[in-house]
Length: 446
Image (cartoon, rainbow, N blue to C red):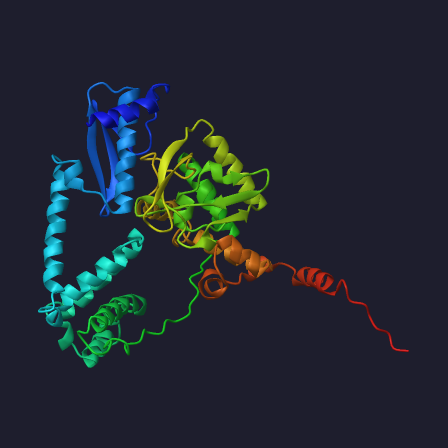
């Protein structure tokens, strides 16, 4: 450790007592301190202090972690120079060098005209996945495998527009291809196709984007909503006393309408029962907390009375829970902030946040125990939307509660009219009539 780093850290720690909770990005590793940070999409951990752990060593580690994060953000981080004995640094350095050599060869004037589809896909993925959410990057990478399987070793310039159209037609599930992909999945593959051949056009490998005329499949506009009934909600709530806390969260969401990833990331600090409000500030996706994927998804919503009652029980059940620091990736998918929160919805087997797959498995078993026909846990969100619209709630209010920018998703997917919920229509018509005609003055004829 450089002396100047220790001297600088001395001023940060000389007046602060040792805390059990370490600064964000600093953790104990046996009798050592290590820092963690994200680099090239990889979570990296490096030991920075060995021996006695005190205020000074903690302050030094925190300062070094901050310096590393800042240098990564500015593009000036030299991993191998900073940690010359690190096996991770050596491995990533070799990987970067190999990629640089490969891209240098691909992009040289002598070879670019003969770039293969595999090389084009790799270059496109590298550009598109930078700064994207993990789920988006994973989806691109998965869909690209179909393109590689069909054209990988061929040159971009040799693939014709007709071949790309035939590829599109042969990929989809049909009478002649019952094992094919769904139209939606094929459309995702076509996103890769159009992107790769657009890059080929921009690099003068081809004169036009040969995939430009390859159109998406039309998707049937079918509602995904299959809402839970009153009776089913009661069964889900009381089916398993051992997991009552989890069941409360699930049923509460039938009155709130969060997405699964938003529900998993919900914290006690987001709830204001006095004001009957709930703030949606983060989601939990692919093992990381992150800001909502769209600005409209960061919102403050209203809590209906059943949600308030369930949430009050949930908060009472976690009264002794201590806050923990979590890292939240910002909307740019690059910068990270820390929050001290008490997560409301935890996996009782791990005490950590639910993974989506684990929650889905639990819910499937829970519906069977409750005697409820199985539908995915996201149907709680659909239940809220369907019940609200069936009770003539204003569409604008429902759209805001769900976090949508307009009514397109609501109209196509999120709500289903529930005749059993409408009650006496005349009551609603009377209310509408009173509201709409309150300022009307009848003009009598002489």
